Length: 176
Image 1 (tube, rainbow, N blue to C red):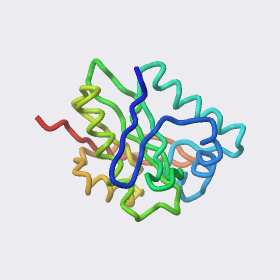
Image 2 (cartoon, helix red, strand yellow):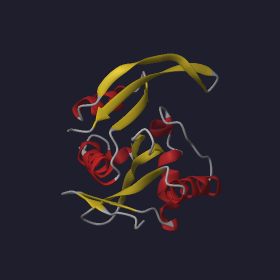
Image 3 (tube, rainbow, N blue to C red):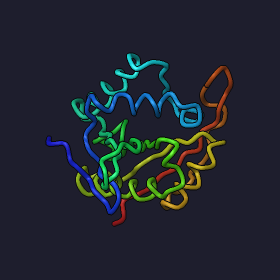
């Protein structure tokens, strides 16, 4: 499968390359970004695992993640994609993060529909799921703008930093 490049008015979604390592580290080591994110790294060397994970998703056909870049100058803005893809159940989990200097500029609500359209139209998925820490109001507000439905809350379902956290479950179903 050839890796698809997706574009909107302001962003280009492209495959990750090795030169993205520093930007991925910048994002996944930033305290404000990882506060509600399930992955973090404390060195460039450790962050290489994330680039391998992106590559393995595609290779194993259980997901696809893109580097989100500015269409103007190619600068790295963040990352987004699908993982835990189930062809049998026609669903996948959405994930997304932006470097903090790109927050509040509408990049998430511009980028996510590109990923949804690819998931529904090209991959034939029926359902996209999002699992969001209950206290992550920014993400929950963004999912509401994107017309995700809140299905419920899994209370105290994971341990993070030695404390139980709850996750809200969101879904978006393909338009028929």
